[in-house]
Length: 315
Image 1 (cartoon, helix red, strand yellow):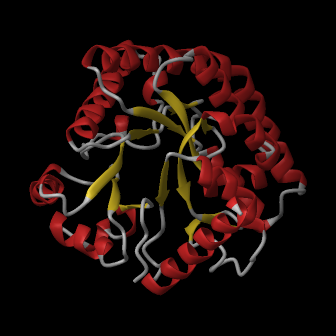
Image 2 (spheres, rainbow, N blue to C red):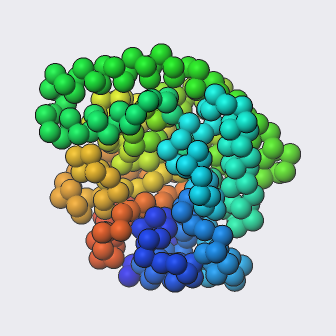
Image 3 (cartoon, one colour):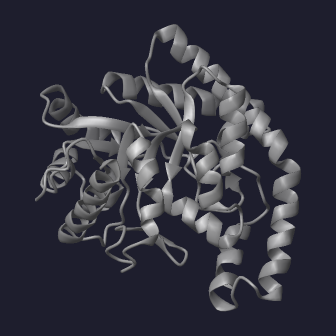
């Protein structure tokens, strides 16, 4: 397998196939990766066999994904109000969990913590209902447009409130990190559900207001493609505006509304993903976040295409 150099690979690809941490990391190393992103499903038990690998220099950790390691609590899972909770105790707990993730990142020499900062809460998963309509009736159908407007009205009305709360929570974490002397980015990630935060312009607001601190954009390419298709923002146009805030990227491609595919290889489109090569090149941390069905040969082919095209960009 091709040596992937400074590129990293998320454990989301194979975590469901393993119970022993070392075996999971060995499988990723066989793909040619020297670095991993430890995702939020990695348990403390798994870390018992991964930690010696980190200490011995067998594997590097580029990033960890909050909440890390895994905690079995739906209030603080990846699809939660998180740093924007109305309930102050829950918000305080979210802040504590993010600080805990940063402690692990610091211990492992990681450069960043990937953060799902929050959402505008709805009574039900309106994103799931919208995606069903999108697939069955199309984006231009009356049913989709009506529900989309309902979602958008609430999201836009409440976004300033939740943006402010998230910002305040991130400020507390940033101050703690500064006191500890941690040099770790807090990468707030573009999300895969339309009611989740942040949008690209919400990221810009938060980063501008917390300028000088560790809060940056974690640009998840596939998620941003999906939100563009659903109508939340103009991905390519706004990417130009937020590119300076990017610290890390999740590299994957979205087919229709299905994410985590190998860029170029699964879409069979050899051009569209070129739009994201500059962002990948600009990012300090570059992580492949692929689904389990992606095969080693496909991962290799995708990486070869990306690295060859980026080399050509650089001239």
